[in-house]
Image 1 (cartoon, rainbow, N blue to C red):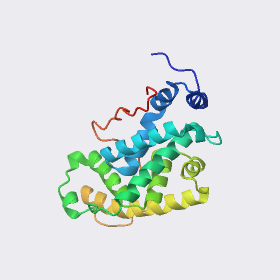
Image 2 (cartoon, rainbow, N blue to C red):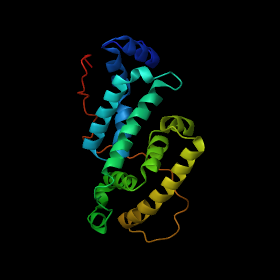
Image 3 (cartoon, one colour):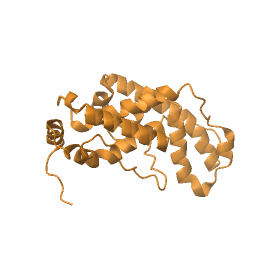
Image 4 (cartoon, rainbow, N blue to C red):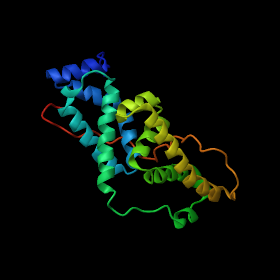
Length: 217
């Protein structure tokens, strides 16, 4: 399959102009990263898939609103993050599963790497949505603070503050759990760490995009 030579802005312009295949190329080019953002923000595969599909439908239908002030990827990330945060807000009224002692007690050292990924996901779920989104973009997606500020529509200082508070909250949750898993007891562990990238669990691949809107993508 030949790689499409058009850059992202050209694809967006062609899509708005009526090119039936341009948006599909754009989605294929960036879907993996957009999926990672949705999955890490929501922590649930089904929710993430639904949010990503909602976001892509919105981006498809509202592409004409893209004015070119930011990169196309920044605009797409903003649409995805907003879709995820909408879902977070809607489900906040539902009961959540706490990080209880039972889960920690049943963990085993031979599954430590998987447990760490699950720990981070569960810990992220306890953060306020705004802090969670900032942590995902800056610490997990390696965006600069300036890029994350564009995606979130806030000042750079706000992103820094949210990341700082989020990291501190995550450290309070994750350190005791890791101490239990490694047999360590208490002690000063130093400053709040930069959040590591939790890899997707086995089989956690990007779901195929199945949305159609009469234009064949």
